Image (tube, rainbow, N blue to C red; front, side, top):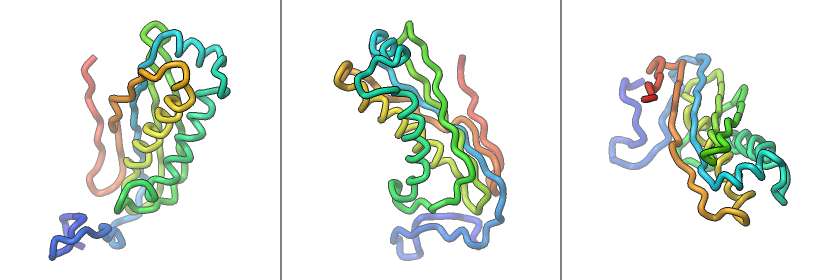
Length: 162
């Protein structure tokens, strides 16, 4: 196996990276993002007064389901036997912010960062979809990898400014 993993063959054509010779290890990734909205919109979510139902419960399920579909959504991404996905939310009613976090785990030959990032993205998009009738000005952003462990590249931990 080459020390350099690439999505291009010797002729420059796109390929799926061959991870067949990589060691099977426990891997996990934690990702985060946020969706900003009018404080009144967030209060409706908290009070479960959105017409479409319990927004955070549906967004949690959508994020988990999205993580499981990552290889169908991201070109050249390996399908993984995900062992666990958790999606959680932290709300800041005064600022109108829902922070989304996703922890994904696998025992496999390649990383699970894309699944955690996809879970966050899909959960945030689901919140937008369920609330857009009330607040079309919502903004999704700050989607990022916070931590990953396992695999040949070792551990990554983002240091965020406070």
